Length: 423
Image (cartoon, rainbow, N blue to C red; front, side, top):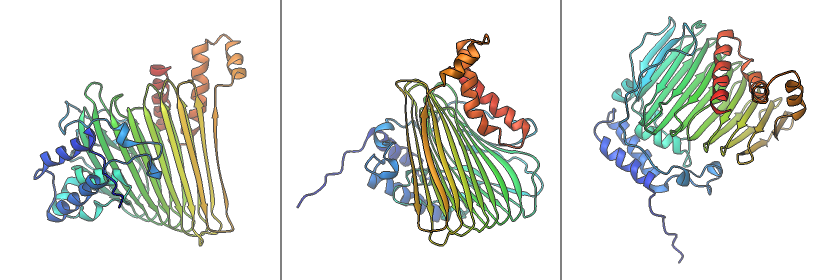
């Protein structure tokens, strides 16, 4: 009989187990929450960190890439000014949520309260055996926010969920519900500090009811030595709309998952993603999108800028169920590769079981068009400035789709600053 020998634990795997052991009795939660945490940690212990042998992690061998895990404690961190003036900020500083006020029509609860009461026990569950982010976050989550927007309520203020970390470990959870015909814009902003490296996990769960319209923006700007594992899951009701914008502009090792269930007829999902990659960073964006009912639409556009020895990945899978006739789903991944040492892997997939659909996907990898570069330089613009203009044009097109002009300006400034810092 051939017996497969389980490989020895890596330094990172052992450090995670040690971190959990140190927090036993300190993590918030009743008996039901404690049982859920133990079950999730046992799954990590049994399977170990995912490797390239697992299809969904094929391009991000976490067992090799996650070389170390910092302790729970970190340095001094503080909340920052909001991205857009007038925004309502709900900060989570070094993993601890505050008790901020909420706009009228919004009910807000710190996630720690749900853990303490046991109400969060059912939320601490992995999506499957390969869901390392769900397992890790469920085992370690300490705080965050749960909020709901009332039906027919249009929230004029932007809500900014601000997670600030200065080293150590941070594990946040955000749970959001949007009632029928509600409207809101939410920024989920992850920030790091220079210096001590950090590990963060963050899970956001969105329930968008019939006719609701939600714009959700993920801004990942962790420190250059930080490791960030993020996951967003959303379910759309009938005639609901989710416009999701993701900008990755930081972190040493990043995995951002997006899982969307288009469950109601007439629903629409948009994804616009900008990955700004430099140095020797590794960034993975993985999408699973399910169209389960007829007459739904989706459109995903991913733009990537790769400098230095950076490596990027986009995995996008669209599933169209047999019942989901009249589905219109489009996906495109475009990469601007500006270094001979950089890499970007794109893996778009379609699984279609319906026969009356319009579905397509595509991927391109290009360098700067030297005709355009010559045109600008011939008019007195320096080579560096001309390149920056062309790169800006490549990604700003997506940001410009937002309706809020102040928000567009703030995001364009963020992208321009990244180009200045890494150009």
